[in-house]
Figure (cartoon, rainbow, N blue to C red):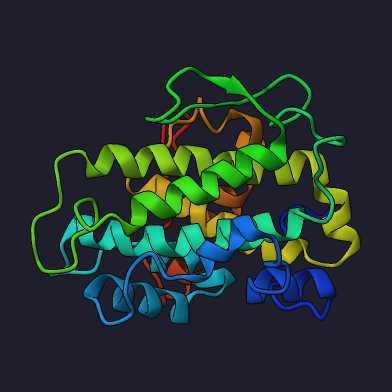
Length: 256
């Protein structure tokens, strides 16, 4: 399969669903997600929109870099809002192909399974893939809507914010891993793999840039991730040779 396609614009129903994020929001558990976790007038959301407006396949890596003069936590929060939106769009799409019967455990391939736990339910619980993604979407929205966690009045971010951001990203990765390893054929059949790849690259370069997810946690998609990283390095090598870009990033084999 063409896993590294850069075709980000495809006229297919599945891609339209992924792009709009509203087509499949008929179930009651998704209705709450139509709200913005961060109000539109805030600096965090404006940074998020600025990033979203500049992202295309060739510019994803540069779009996640911390701009000069911007607070690191505020920038991570703005990126996290975009990552969350893309994950919810993907969950909406998988709703039609991922069921309790087809995916009785949240998984990344045949040998990697994930349990759910949170503050209210600290005991890890095996759940189906749809149930895991439902809980994750609801949980992430609650955390991102928490004004103590993501202050919008200029207050300092709490010390635990980086840890919460890393935890959410680790769980967001699992949605991508499940989509690629359990449902990629359906996505490809609907000509939407290019858009999926663009969203995953945004996630990948973001968590690499800020060291939010370890290589061990990304192991199910590590080969694909390395291919994306190498693809991006070659693109930047070409720009550097032509005098139009910075040197390519080094792809380290160790933890992100």
